[in-house]
Image (cartoon, rainbow, N blue to C red):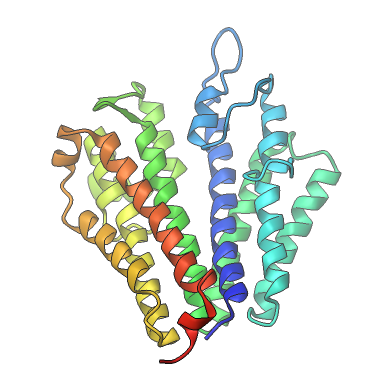
Length: 313
């Protein structure tokens, strides 16, 4: 059984890298869409909402300043550089539990970002930097799957990765619905939503290029095969928790596993017409609340548990 600090570090490596990849992809997509550019200048409020970051009292006036803030400002905990730094710090703490290939890939990503920031070329080449991060995280995930044993440590990495993804995708879809009213009126906004989830091509293969809001909601929430749908992520969270409970052989994961199973079941039997005919925001906020409760249960079971609960009966 892993030490609680090891499980915690592996869990947060998965979450931080998923968060960094998501932020980099959002920056890349929103720059392509013009960051809601208007005749009077740049409007950053929608991007900050999409990125789930509080709008500062003095928002950036140019896209380059926004990229510098959300890509490289380590004082902002959700910036790409901060997330990569935190993932690397956690990896250093559990160096004996991860493979050399995993460490080398994560360290290489950190060094490349550091080099770009030192050269002050990030804001001038934001698409290059965004794709560097996305590809770097994808490479780390691939190296992890191919070089790390799929035991308890690997399961904690998957748990963090997919729990972060489920909550983020639900929040992103939630932003496009308000009291049952579909906010983005333009075709480009729906394309942007799909691209923000790396889902445009997969959606078109499933539904053709006919972009309908109800189909987009169904695909991103309820599709069982697309890796970035909430349903797929919930299934992986439940599977990871079930496996961890078996491997720890102490039954401590019962509550977290039950909560993950409840979330997965609600998505398995969900119907998009029912979700949209009622209040989609309530449904999506419920998903976010379930994710937060699963996180708290994981901590209670595997990180902050009492010594007595871990001893054999």
